[in-house]
Amino acid sequence: MSATKNPVTCVILATSDLHGYIRETDYRTGEERQDGLAKLATLFRKERALEPGLILIDNGDLLQGSPLAAYAAGRLREDEPHPFIPVMNELGYDAIVPGNHEFNYGMPLLRHAMRDSDFRWLSANIADARTGEPAFGKPYIVKWLTGGVKVAILGVTTSHIPNWEHPQHIVGLNFLDAVETVRSWTARIHEEEAPDLLVVSYHGGFERDLALAGESAEERLTAENQAYALCTEIAGIDVLVTGHQHRLIASELNGVTVVQPGCNGQAVGKITVSFVHEEGRYRIAEKRAELLMPDASTLPDERVLQLTEACESETQAWLDQPIGKLEGDMRIASPFSCRAAPHPFIAFIHRVQMEAARADISVAALLSEDTQGFGPVITVRDVLTTFVYPNTLTVLRLTGQAVRDALERSARYFAIGTDGRLTVSRQYLEPKAQHYNYDMWSGIEYELNIAKPVGKRVAKLNRHGAPIAPDEELDVVMNNYRAAGGGDYDMFRNRPVIREVASDMAELAVEFIRKHGTIYPISADNWRIALSESDG
Image 1 (cartoon, rainbow, N blue to C red):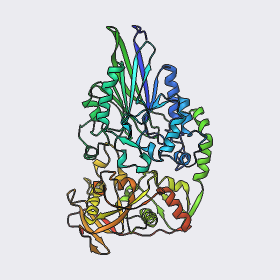
Image 2 (tube, rainbow, N blue to C red; image 1 turned 45 degrees about the horizontal axis):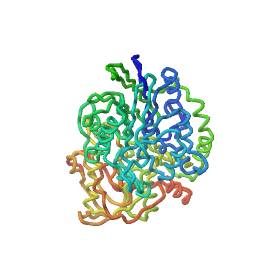
Image 3 (cartoon, rainbow, N blue to C red; image 1 turned 30 degrees about the horizontal axis):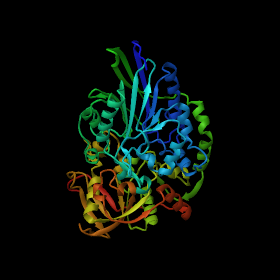
Image 4 (cartoon, one colour; image 1 turned 180 degrees about the vertical axis):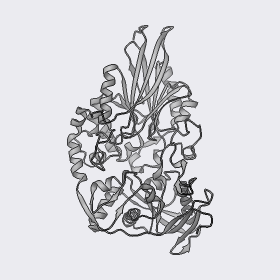
């Protein structure tokens, strides 16, 4: 390629964690959202009009998360493309990095999506277990800009997937450390390609607060997020696209320009890089990151709507199917109140889990902040907005000490505010909200005293009125994410698995409601929160 001495500008647009929110639909209320890929597509087209040669990448977690994604996954035919792929092809994506949720429906669905993609799927650290080579082929692409600027884009995925995903979904894959993999590939790309700009697209987030440089204990232990290390420990990265944490970031760290564009199509990350030609090659003169966000004035892209119209119509009809009735009240006034005291809706989740897994003790979390509970007529929509992840169930054999340790982990969710009232601990809100990592239990009686020091808050732990001994063995049902230790519940790792339930929780809940026909709330008073040293 010949180069000119004219200045050159590179524009990179990046989406991440779309989670199936292609359209601007609020599947819970039916109202229009101010996000979704259809609205972002309108922003893409405006940017392309200004910079036809821009680069468009997605940073993962595309195929799971919305009811549209769940419907598509459950009804995908071999002879048709996954409905999201024609959209990505139409919009001209150059590459996608597989996120952890790409594996939730198993490798056949992911391979199906890859088959019809006009773009590359990139991940350097997801390796074929037999060969050790990247499982999805060459993990980077090279793009030439007008004027001769050479841009390399390397993909990498959080290595923590085996700690969450069902083993059957990732057979034959090894997940290598992201930092060491990027270190190796960065050196290799610079040696073999000599790019003028190296972009790393990493489906993972920051293990440290960028403003305070304070390290998160959870991520330090799990290596789930390693973006801080990528920026500070590896030379040669110019731009880092991040995700997974659903944060909105447009910044710079150690000379690396970084973006993270939220989730569900909240924003698109835009990185603008200006080059000047000096001494026979291009040099980066300036880099700038920003977030472009749609609003009420941003109309969804008509072509994206056309491509998804049939699937959307079928999804809406499916969601509106009544599956049962409710006699009583199982509405959730607020997610916080649902977590602060026993609630009939959580009791319902425990009933579903215990019946499906034939267990007497259950642990569960309120997974979605959008959950409103059930009204008089229960539909598929009500269930799907509650069970937003395709988690299956696992029964673990735990000791009494492991149960106590898990309760202490959950007790860290709470703090006492300056007004003396119960509130959520800052570590569960920053840098990413982690409400889903607070668990509630059924089948045991317990009390958490938030006035006591962290790690010593379990004031009571009984079963059938008698204290649970540290070495007592208990069979407990929970979702597979938690059973693998997800959310820093290390006390669950490598415990004996007594039973597994293959169906996911949404399917089990629908089956439970249809079987019983009419659901009656049950009161649960097996636990309480105390707020003073003398309480209890």
